[in-house]
Amino acid sequence: GGDGIMKIFIDSADIDEIKQAYEWGIADGVTTNPSLLKKAVTKHKKKNKNLNLKNYINQILKIAKGSPVSLEVTETSKTGMLKQAKNIHKLFKSHKNVYIKIPINPAFKESDTTHFDGITVIKQLTKLKIKTNCTLIFTPEQALLAAKAGASFVSPFAGRIDDFIRVSNKLKVDKTAHYPVWGMQKKDKTLHDNGIVSGIDLVEQCVTILKHYNFKTQVLAASLRNTRQVRESAMVGSDIATLPFTVIKEMLKHQKTYEGMKNFTKDIVPEYVKLTK
Ligand code: G3P
Figure 1 (cartoon, rainbow, N blue to C red):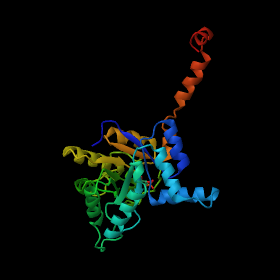
Figure 2 (figure 1 turned 90 degrees about the vertical axis):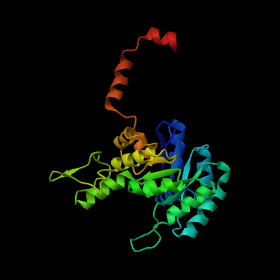
Figure 3 (figure 1 turned 135 degrees about the vertical axis):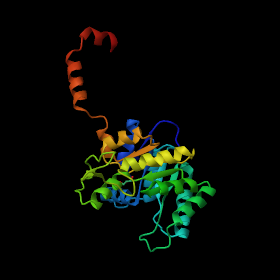
Figure 4 (figure 1 turned 30 degrees about the horizontal axis):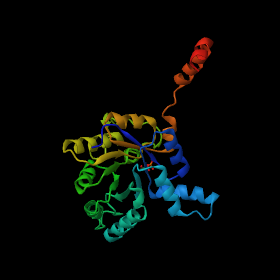
């Protein structure tokens, strides 16, 4: 588990977004993945065709000032992932804040024979004192094995489980719509994926299991699409929640807060301002 307060990471590889989140003073870390990196690199290459990726990542690591930054492997074989993880570690070692993201199961289909390679690699990296973030977690038992292998973080993908439960039950998928923590009902039955009724339920089960055995591994709630899921991640005691920039931006907004600001401003007593300004 973590150190008692839910940390907020920014789920982005876009340096502008990362910089802003750190300037606001709310970011405790960064998570990236191949899709987020592609999006960021595409955006920044439009401005600068010769974008140097090593410099770009170094800048992100500098902005994060020692707070955890996850960089994912793209290789899928045991030796490939291990070599790439060591290379990433070596390349950015001086910042002391890189966590290597390893998929829980690097197989593409059930008949592949590589299902346990992620675990094996996490175990070897743990021995080398290289920190890992185990990604693409969709079951608590995946989280349990990753924690046992020594992963620093396990990343359950909350939003994608909600998508999956909806798709499996032929319900319309609206990625940003709230999905109830206690699950959706259809014909008086709660929909679930092997006992998981929602993304936040998955996060909670991971938290419960890891707390139960005092694992040092922290639960990092990922694939969160709205502010309510951030609140719910905190309600179930997730150590970390990683948020897209758009979700971070929504977190402080409320109609009544704007209204309150306007009304308080109308009521200002000038002498009070004079005395205190
Ligand atoms: O943190 C994982 C995240 O980047 C995936 O999010 O919304 O594509 O499921 P999403």
